[in-house]
Image (cartoon, rainbow, N blue to C red; front, side, top):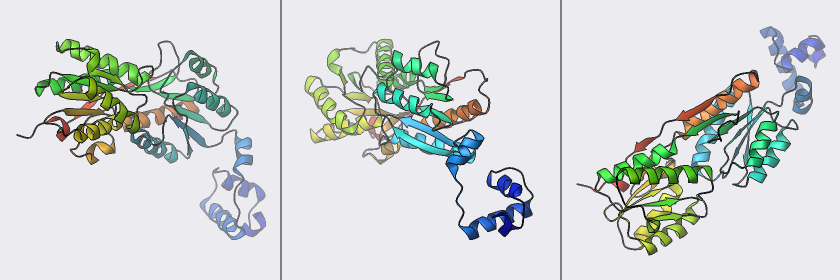
Length: 326
């Protein structure tokens, strides 16, 4: 290739490895590479420079719209810095996330953004032992020195309950995901606190725990909720559960919002696509993802930086599912 380009081997190496070179030499080397059909050996290059130029993003469910929006936001940030994004769907089992961490620590990525649903002592131990630059999207126990970005979902649920109360709702049910997860625990705490603050009834028959944060689990859980109580409003722990609740409610001949008002969480794309459009608590998924990506790039560049913990404030986006038309 050096002969074809009419430059030295050292100049070819500099251009192909992204090092400074004059524009004329760079153009000649790139033209020669194109003529010869040269494809860089990324494995050999990563061994040489000590980097893979890959960032890993691990989420519980790649089919969940909130994770899709996070993926796009992370990719936008890391791609602009010259990294490829590798996506992994780990499910909700911490064992799978621990296995992923161990594999990535063998040099398969330069950093990891992880959004775990469950944070166990074993996972915390692996996070602390990891040599890989890490950022967690989600809450961590106090004393875990890992960069993290989280939503204030307790406050978010409070915004939903307050909104429904202001619109005359008093029997406010809560459709949660698994309570042994980080979001399930936080959102239940937010519901109980908001209901108590407003002196609204807190009864077991107005609360139901879905097996997962999925549409299918929401169908089963909503059926159980309506079989055991008669809520005039339901706060749902995410938009997928809320859309499932809407289907069951309408299937029973009831109207949203006239008979039962609905509020979801995450403010994903399906909130606007629902009919009626779904009121939802925006937990800043895109903002959290962008911040996590920037924190990770900074950590990769300088591992000695102090640990950062960022909280993104929620906002209620009001649509037709919670407001009765005048």
